[in-house]
Structures are given as structure tokens and as C-alpha cells.
Length: 323
Length: 62
Image (cartoon, rainbow over all chains, first blue to last red; front, side, top):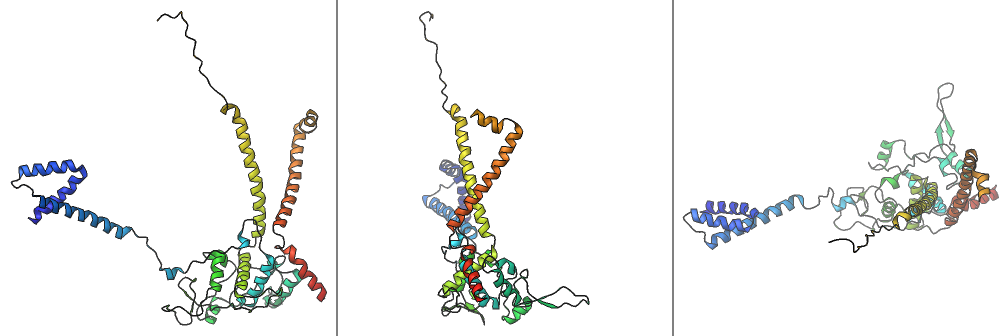
């Protein structure tokens, strides 16, 4: 009996494709050939079973392919930073070089203890944040290897403008050993290298809570920061109000320092930005004028074509025509 | 009008000379004008605007 009803339900499935008419026909025909006539109860059971099968298969398919698959949990993804209205990110604005100078001061007094800035030479700072004399004085504070002398010995010499800012550690292993196994990343391109750019770095620097929220799991020696992917970051909060004394007497609040150092790091990642935007403005202006000109020329050339009127003038019906 | 045409475009070499010279002149004028506009839009933000503070300060120290 069960087997029969199952058979019937599969047949119903086939019949459904052809529409209700064939279904009724078939039920009539089977009832004609078979001895038993289908009772309404059996038909209802068949309909319920097929519907359940259809709904079930759709639900199973959705369960398998429907929901978006995320590789990471939200905690592993990190909190997405808010968008801040950075002036230097506007189309026609340069970096604020006063802020760059403050940011460089923050980098030198705070970040430089752990983070290198290995792709920025002292000469790049000249004419951007420092005068020539200041940059030379800074470069001379460090020692660099010389070329081998006549006896093949490598000696030390004071730094020059063409030298790069020295890293705080000799190599990555030394950096890891000094930082509990964590490697402080090089900051030269960090703004370009992180999703969210300026917003992310600013949020990271200012986003350390007083204490980790209840239930947050932290490995030993780690600090909680919701913006950092995984929320456990080896770097502790470093920026506190009044940590740095700015030479231009700007109040050194945490957010002020973070903002300045983020703008400085943006400069380190994109030192060409000022020139690029100025060139872009020139190109956009000329292109806009040429575009408008080309539209005018097109309309001018097409004016005679567009305003032309083609008229069919039928010959007048004359009385001479025989019908 | 025809005098202008005769003076500038009568011969091909004349026309070429005019084109090159006017391109050169336009480039200079356009660059100067746009740079001035740019400096005006970014007043106080660029290094050349704040440079004087640090250069003078150093001269006083010396």
C-alpha cells in the first residue's frame, strides 16, 4: 500500500510538469485500467507528500548554497573603522605640512622605538617636514657602514642626507626577540598596506579600551583592540595625552598625535601625492574643456543633418485621370 | 582677418611655427595660472608656506 502511494507521488511529480490537466487525465486513466478508484484521501496524501518533498529539497539546497560563507568570524575580521573627514584625502588638497612635521616628531619620539621606516631617506624629509640643516643634523646622529677601505675594512661614518632612516633592530629576529615574539611591521607603506588606510590606523591607535570587555579571550602578553583583526594585538596602547611636547605648541592629545602621525605615515606611503594631485587638477581641467569643445563641434556638424526635414509631396490628383 | 591669415598661416612652415610657439606660450601661461590657483587653494598647508618659521628660527640661534 505504501509502495503504491509512493509510486503515485513520483508519478504526480512527473505529471506536475505537464500541468494539472494531464494529472487529472492520468488519474482517470489509471483508475480506468486498475481495479481500484483513487479515494480523495489518497490524493490528498500524495499532494502533501510531494509538497513536502519539494519544500524539503528547496530548504536543503538553500541550507547548502544559500547563506554567504564567511572565512572569518567578526572578531577575526576586526571592527571596521569609522570614516573620518581627512582633509588631505580630498581631491584638490595637499598634505598639511605642519601636521606632517608634528607627525614626524611623534614617529621619532614614540613609534621609532619599535617600528622601522626603512624606505624613507633623510633627503625625502627635506622640503617636506625639515629644513636641510635639520635633516643633516638628524642624519649625522646615526652611524652607517662605509665602503671597504684599502685594507678591506668597513668602518663607520656619520649619516648623510642620502642615507635611509635606520631601523630600531638589526633584523626581524632581533625585533621578534625584543617584542615577545611579535614583529613590529615597517611603517613606510603601512597606510597603503592595510584595509581602511588612515581610518584604520587612527582607530587602532585611539581604540584601546580601558580594559578588555568581559568574555574576551586574550593570549598572554597581548592587548585588546577591537579594530585589530583577531582583537589580540601585541602592541600596547602607546599614545597618551601629553606624551609629546609639540614645538608649535599644539595641545598633544591622544587623538591629535594619532591624527598627525597617521598623516605623516600617509606621506611616507605616498610622498608623490601633492604633485600627483596638482597634475591631476591640470589634466582634469584641460580634459573638461576639450570634452566640452568636442561636444560643441559634434552638435555644430550635425546641426544641418538633425534639422533637415524630408517631406513627401504627392502629385495633385487631376481630373484627367480615368478611374 | 585675411591679413592675419597671410601673416600666420600662409605657408606651412609659418603655420608650424605658430602652432609650436603658441603651444609653448599656452603651456607656460596655463602652468603658471594653475600653480597659482593650487597654492591659493592650499594656502598655509604646503612646506613653502611654513618654511620661513624654521629657517628664521635657525638663523637666530646661530
